[in-house]
Image 1 (cartoon, one colour):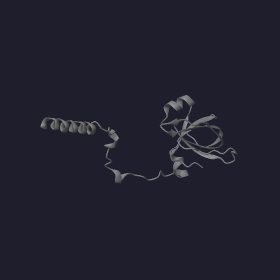
Image 2 (tube, one colour):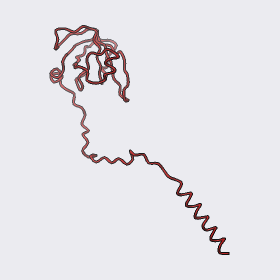
Image 3 (cartoon, one colour):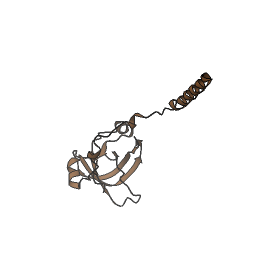
Image 4 (cartoon, helix red, strand yellow):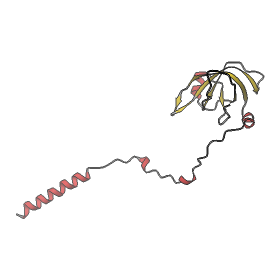
Amino acid sequence: MRIPRFYTILMMLATLSAATSCKKEYVRPDHYAVDLFQNEKNEQKKRVLSHEEAAEKSLIVIKSNETELLSTPVINKKAVYIYKINAGRLMKTDKDSINFPVRIISDQDLKISSTKSDSLFMYLIKPGSYKLLVDDFGVRYQILPSSPVR
């Protein structure tokens, strides 16, 4: 009599342990990550340069009201804007003249209105990123990051 009870108790323990031990959850490695510098994060907003600072850092400054948006490709979940300047006035340049139209690339939307009544100051530098887009669209300049938009 003792042997059947022993086997039933053993079988119940085996099924109970099998039911609990098979349930194994996979934990992704990013759950193990610990941010050691959580309190030291620099969450300051980007400071917009003044017109004088932007003019000093840029190669070319163009004032134009004939600017149109050509394309808005998305790279790494971030929109990039490609504009074409049909005509404009050179405020600062490293050359004597520039042949219009000029294609430029920007990280920020210039919010060009359809009325084209107000002109924009565009502070331009040589493109330092987006090499494939520069080649595909024939972009010659990039808007200076953190430059004033209007």
